[in-house]
Length: 403
Ligand SMILES: Cc1cc2nc3c(=O)[nH]c(=O)nc-3n(C[C@H](O)[C@H](O)[C@H](O)COP(=O)(O)OP(=O)(O)OC[C@H]3O[C@@H](n4cnc5c(N)ncnc54)[C@H](O)[C@@H]3O)c2cc1C
Image 1 (cartoon, helix red, strand yellow):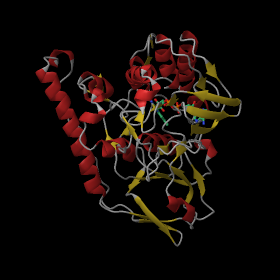
Image 2 (tube, protein in one colour):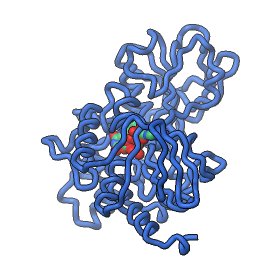
Image 3 (cartoon, helix red, strand yellow):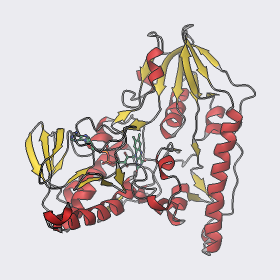
C-alpha cells in the first residue's frame, strides 16, 4: 500500500520517502507459508498505472510471483524507498511528525501509516493454558507440514488461513481437527466466473465504508474460505470433511488439559450457508437487472454444509492424540511504535476512511478502510488516490486555517 501511495504522491509532485523495515514486499517474503498463493485472481493484481499482463489472468500467483510483481512495480514507479529502516517511534511536533528510525530521524508534515493490517498473528489468551507438551504454531511460524511433529494437529480458525492449512496438513497424513467459529463461506467459482469477479462486477467490492450498515462489524468479519489453486478448487468445510478433517465447534476454553469446544455446529453452518446464498442471490439479481445473463452460466446453489452427526465437545490434550496446534485465529496491526493518541480502547486506529484522528496523519490497507476491497492489492489504488488527494489539500491549506 505504501508503494501505491508513493506512486500517487509522485503524480502530484509531493516530495516523500517510503520507509521499509525489510525489503520491498517484505510481508510476502517473510510472513507467509510456502504453498500460499494469492486467493485473488491475477487480473486483480493491479496497482496504480500497473497491472498483471501475463498469460493466465484467471490464475493465482505464488509468493515468488507476488514478490516479483510488487518489486517490478516499485522499480517501474521509481518509488523512493529506504529499505532496512525500521520506524521505532512517531511523535507529533508543531509542524507535523518526528519519525525515529533505525537509520536516523526524520521530520515530516504528513505521514501515511501503510505498515499493514496483519503484522502480528492474533492468538487468544487461552493459548497460554495449553499443556507444554503441545507445540503451538501461527501462520508466521508455520512454513509447511514438515515443521509439525508427527501426530494429530488442531487447527483453530476456519477462515482463509485455517481452511488452507487444514487442507495441506491433512494431505500430509496427519489427523486434523478443525475448530470452526463464525466464518464466511464462498464458492471459488459461481456461474462459471471467479466469485471475486462477481464481487467486483456487481459493485459489492466497491461499497464504501460510509454506506455500509454497521461498518464496525463488517471490518471485523473473518476472511472468506477461499484458496487459489490451478484447479480453481472450492475449499469449503464439505471439501475438508471429505478429505478427512474432523470439524468441531469454536474453541471455548482449555481446562485441566482438555480443549473444550462449543456445540451448535449445525446453526453455525446454517448461518454461513444462508449468508452465502444471500450474496449469490445479490449476484443473480445484478446479472438479471444489468442484462448480463448471457455472459455467465446458469444460477447455482451448493450443497448445504454437512454437520457431523455429533461433534466432539472435548479433546484431551495430554493423551498424546494431539501433538500440535496451529492458531489460524487472525492477524492484527502493530502500532507499538506510534506515540500519537489515535488508538481506541479496543486497540483500533481511530480514523474516518483512512483520515486518522490527528492532523496530517493517514492510514492505508486496513479492512474496509474506504471500500470493501480496501485490504486487498486490488483495492490499494483507489484508496491511495483518494487519501493522497486529501493529503494534498491538507498540505495546501495554510497552517493557521487548519487548527
Ligand atoms: C495470509 C495472507 C494472505 C493474503 N492473501 C491476499 C490475497 O490473496 N490477495 C490480496 O489482495 N491480499 C491478500 N492479503 C492481504 C495483503 O496483506 C494485502 O493485500 C497487502 O499485502 C497489504 O499491503 P500493505 O502494504 O497494507 O501491508 P503489508 O504487505 O503487510 O506491508 C506493510 C509493510 O510495512 C512494513 N513495516 C511494518 N512496520 C514497520 C515499521 N515499524 N517500520 C518500517 N516498516 C514497517 C512491513 O515490513 C511491510 O513490508 C493476504 C494477507 C495475509 C496475511
